[in-house]
Length: 318
Ligand code: ADP
Ligand code: MG
Image (cartoon, protein in one colour):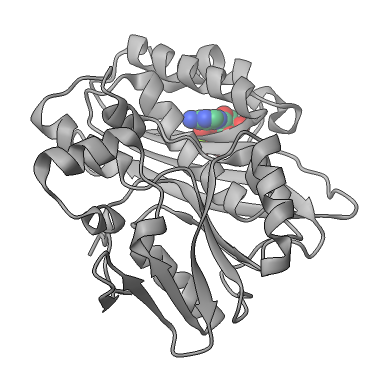
């Protein structure tokens, strides 16, 4: 079995029109009048972003979803993606079949198609997957990290810290029925809500490397202070139970990665509109703080009212 067979049998059925059935060297995209293309890329490596023995379908879905999360945070509607697979020499066909099945499920869930990619052998065992995802947004409306204004409210979707705790639990005792571990294995990007934020939010990004670190990026690019109220940060009941049991401070969760929620700012007067959008898209949404004139930094108020400066904290590769 060779990669041409895998491409034809497993990847070509996933191809959208732009991918020319994966029968050519390249994909073909036409400009869309009135729209901008928004393009993002994330790589996932076994041992860093997932475990090599995770289900191939879930690995595929995580690789796609982390990219869809970036597009959602930019207000873009995902359309297609390119997939680079670097696979160990001993990869079995059954693994590729399961991997493609995972992609197919998510293509239907998120309305995206495969437009091309590359398949190659890697030395060693670290499966490495790179996805480049493309989405569209009305011209000039892509949400940026810059653009927050003093007085804007800071919002966060979903809950924070579940995947971080899921990873801890996964290392101790793998169990894909465990809710927290599921959140680590399979991010739930806020795609429908994200697309509604274009033209509404003043600045946005996806939280992938820790709430506090990512808030720091927003503060720096928007050149202002973000004050986050630790109490207001939404936690799932599973995460809250874990904190109670382990007598840990919730702040420990704000440094963990893999949340794939959207952090954004918007003028106060849009609060009712935002809550309505959230309800319509079944998205949980909380205001977690405020943007203020001041140095580019994040300040966290903890339960005792202490203020901690914490912009540098979070996942870093190097
Ligand atoms: P090349 O020799 O130019 O690298 P390939 O044989 O790798 O060409 O690719 C042939 C076609 O298959 C192209 O359209 C390419 O985009 C597609 N393709 C290859 N690998 C993948 C993959 N992992 N996912 C999606 N499409 C792929
Ligand atoms: Mg190739």
